[in-house]
Length: 127
Image (tube, rainbow, N blue to C red; front, side, top):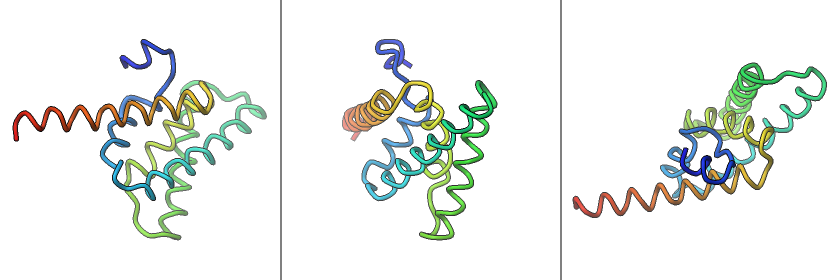
């Protein structure tokens, strides 16, 4: 929320940076989430262009399409993280459609790295 307030760029929802931070050590899964986000974003661009869907309906369609992609990926590559495979791509695609590629991915991954570093610093004090 602080990042959005300071920059005006979305990060793909409030939970996305935290989920990405938890999976930073899994580059393959992060790549799948990135690909699913881009495919969902392309779907949203077409949906908005041809139907004029906005707001909550646009977000709902993003989540449904991301779920369909997750189910297809699960059949192809095996089990994937529910949050990273479904929620993150849907939320990021909705922000991609609103803010664009660089602000959304830059914001999401930079805040994810900051969250991971902050958690390591905090946990270091108690270790």
